[in-house]
Length: 293
Image 1 (spheres, rainbow, N blue to C red):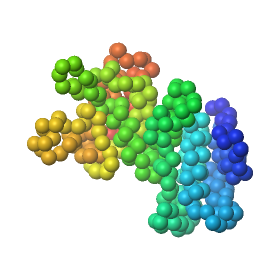
Image 2: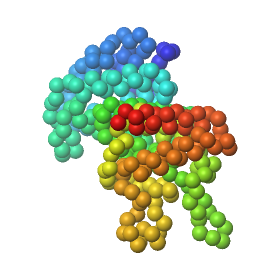
Image 3: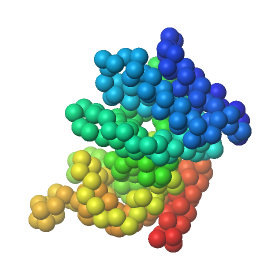
Image 4: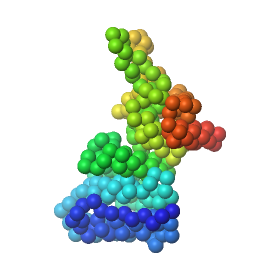
């Protein structure tokens, strides 16, 4: 594990930003300067100082900026680096601090156990993240952020089912292929997935780090959709009065679809070796999850 140097992207950061960077940077190294619980306590004290320094400001101002900074820091840590786990250890210790009630956007919540607004600063996709950077750099940074978010979700620190389902539906729920002069066809062929290496890597993070949170549930997750293999054909959907092949959210049938498609990618000789290896690791993670249930 190499030394991780976190940098602030604001050319004129304030002292609070610099202090957050210093605290997080000290906690995530191979030989940490500070423990996760000491770092969490220091961050909590920083929140108190912030609210005391600017009493006219609302808690959401600090929280939105704080989570954005942590997302940026996570984007700088390789997805498979142990520093990712150390960063999430700090989050875990934050949630263990004594509760205090705050009001965020008119709703009461607990700081830090509710992780208020954690998901609000998570980018929807790589295309909206830092558009001035080269595409491959942006994709790598967003992959790193997914690894961080999936780890936090896997520790049950916050609810991120929407992000997990979105990532998995992009990679392992098929593609719609246009056919000239005929209706589009739904394909389960991995080679028809646009940008498969990136989407595959992102989706794998969620089953590797949080498969145990997704598996074994039959639960509607409002606001989620599905890929072509999960959506029923129009006539059948009208006849049955439902849109999807199972629960709109999480269910055993959808888990099986994901696993089947990961297997298809793993076994497809037309797919790049690195992508097939990621799929193989995803399948192994899903099998372990099933065995441990």
